[in-house]
Image (tube, rainbow, N blue to C red):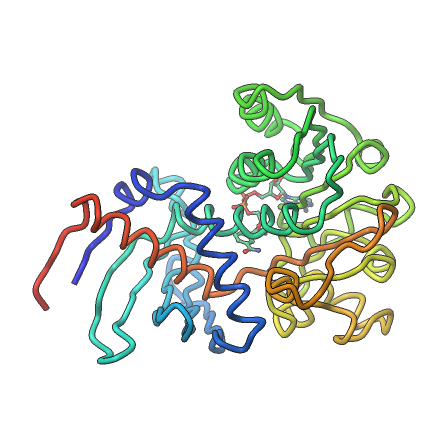
Length: 321
Ligand code: NAD
């Protein structure tokens, strides 16, 4: 059995390796070769914590496991990350525990890989302006992965808490991209690709603000009641997601579904585009929207890749069971 610490994950796991692992499992999901199991998420009545499990099985990649963890809101005051998780991987032939992998850094990498895959597959080739809505913990991971997908020339950004924007601006600067804080309407008018990564519970971007041809990756909405964009914008866009069942229940399309503006049949798993079964974007004027809800198989895919790389480099701790 391998133990791969948070520190080792940071050392060995790369954005390209996360991109490849997540893309492969999205493809397997769309082919019916990989399944996510029902998510458990409970308030434990202690430390105001939310604790749960995301699990699944990738029969194509032979990855079986569970991510356990959740949200401990008072951790920050202790100098710890509020989101805490660990991935347990099992041998699918025997059920024996094969690896324990730190899940905190990998969660950010797999979430950024998801939106990056959508940009890679769906954004216009000539996209030059990246719009960022959100400036929290995930945003810099999102920015770093996004800029590897197109020849972006500058970044425009908006955040509910404007004081958080300079930190994201510093990352853009490090990447050699001019960064400008703008109002939301202006962001829509300028951006060719937009990533939303907030904990908002109301629409932040309205349909009429978005240019034809824009690609939007909605990454923040992962719970019932959360929302980042106008349901009319969702209805006007060609819709893609990681998993349709999650998109309509806890993802960004939940509101357009509830309002009767779209149906489940209007949403395509991005794995179908990856597998060549759906053309993806079909015109330069189409608005494409990817609803990245975050599935357990993403976590297992990157954890499995990290464990393999760590083992190959001699950096995984081997323990007898
Ligand atoms: P964070 O707490 O570090 O940042 C929160 C962000 O939301 C900040 O930009 C903050 O200014 C903004 N925000 C807070 N309240 C707001 C409001 N009322 N209106 C608009 N914006 C508001 O969180 P994070 O770790 O960066 O995560 C951001 C979001 O992404 C969270 O909602 C989280 O649950 C979600 N998330 C999704 C996935 C996925 O796979 N889809 C994975 C990880 C996190």
